[in-house]
Image (tube, rainbow, N blue to C red; front, side):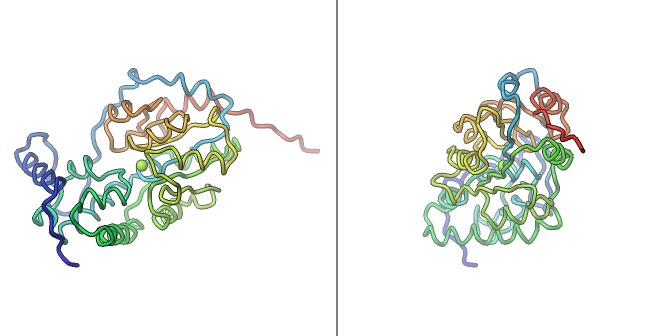
Length: 289
Ligand SMILES: [Mg+2]
């Protein structure tokens, strides 16, 4: 793969991130060794977040799910893929990007936007070829590394038991999204999968969530969304659907500021179980004759 000519804002930012990290300013781990990812120690201050918006959703009709970082903790795999390929093309003078740089500039972004931001001086088709290569590496790494967020499968059973409508809504490419749902055993669970790039506008615009509501025939007044990124939360809020934010990787303040109605650590969080009990629909029982 040819080295890309880079004298870029993000390139400079990458160098700055490496420099500050080497000084130990933020006490973060170095990311220049073998690929690894440390779960961020992010305390969840539930008192600062209100769940009253969610209480108004009863009876709950549907739940919409983001995929990356929400159904599964996939960011470490994306980070590994970006770090390896960016180094290979000479980004940041060949110095590997750091976790801080990835979190601040890449995580949750749409590929089209990332291609322009990472390679503003490069022909866009060539920049998109880099993104395609990165997605191919992600799909190669995912089968061995992808893990469901804690409590996901119990929640899915609860959703099936309560006959709730559901959809997966993501900015990921369709091939990635379908692979992740397959690896998680959720291909059949989601009758609808909405891809951001197949809508007029991807997240943070509301289009993909509005499309999901339309396809499953659900009311925003009785639906909520699970999201893990500020961009995704803004998309949900713009669609007038309350959002439960997962602090999988992103700081709670970032998710709060984006408009999350409730913050949870994972799908086993007591705060989530409590609100689900409050708004769960009555499941009609059919008398056996
Ligand atoms: Mg996400």
